[in-house]
Length: 137
Image (cartoon, rainbow, N blue to C red; front, top):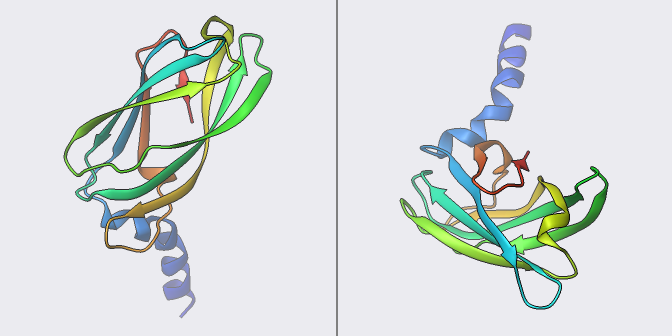
């Protein structure tokens, strides 16, 4: 009995991941100055999960070059179609691109695959950055 409970505890964190065929790759592709004093971020989302997403909200911490958190921003990346690479642009107001040192994927606020219940998607997200600023998790 104790072995069964222990085995269930070990499998519980990964049971939700089994519904996904692969990762959702989030890539910070490019940063450029936006309107006024904003920074425009280009993100690519490579959806290899085997399902579309009707909701995906990410909380990002913008860190300055000295490592101090400047602000938290929430971005809505939905919808994300299955087996597609999608480009999304986000404006970070009152943020200079050359003042950024790092962008942290802080948490996933909402993650809802199409026609399914909401899921904890943090573990299926793989991150990458082609920009001069790293994207970290």
